[in-house]
Image (cartoon, rainbow, N blue to C red; front, side, top):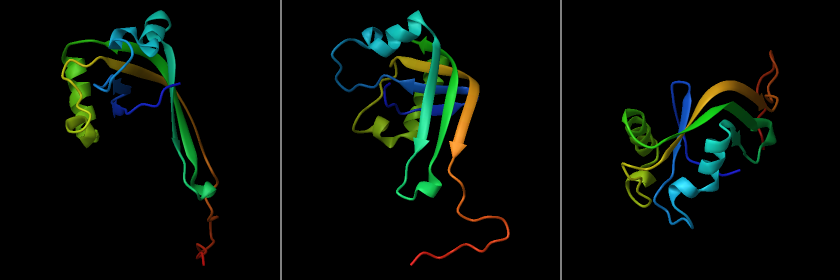
Length: 126
């Protein structure tokens, strides 16, 4: 399990291997080797807040691919830079960065019960 910054384009989730120091080259990272050996993968997105009535998560499953060059890689990097200003400044994302694509085939989700039931006025908290 690895925390990632991601962007959704169509039915594909993209993440990139950024320029932060790594102990091995991008192609030798465990997540990249795992995808090349077995492309079945999932991404869990969760939303945590102190008010547990507002918790939710989404689990996206599908086939992962490593995208090392070409138009798809360029689109993914541009979209990641648009979404995350940090990729343009403090932790730059190289134009030739290795990209991991997850072609989403399955979606599961959950959210906590909404605190307001139908027909009830919202309660104000003191």
